[in-house]
Image 1 (cartoon, one colour):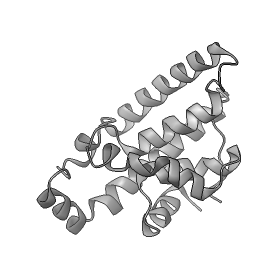
Image 2 (tube, one colour):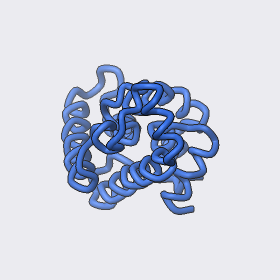
Image 3 (tube, one colour):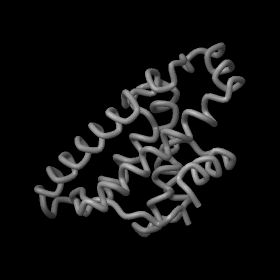
Image 4 (cartoon, helix red, strand yellow):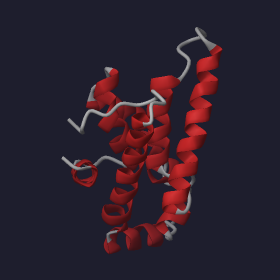
Length: 157
């Protein structure tokens, strides 16, 4: 299943962008899809419909943290590694998509009832958000392929 197909499938199931990205990689990290969706639930629409950091981005940052972040207090250097990897992800995502900010990426204000209704009616979530989810997944996979060790992919299964 392609990234875009996976993103569309997740949207059809009612997931947000963060849930879709985290659940794509979660099973490889020992997390079931339901746990991924629970953890990422409040991160959709730029964090709880606040249109701040894109949900696809926050989902990707969760993946990076799970892969390269410090566990408890074991090795503080791992936190630095996750910061470096996250900054590189953010750089690549913004370069490819123009921003990491939900409001800018959607070019719509979904914080108002009218704006949200317009976004739903015009299909912004199904088109733009699925493209952003796919982009986040693709960038994480490319970074993994370059050997940074921060992420793996389960192919959306």
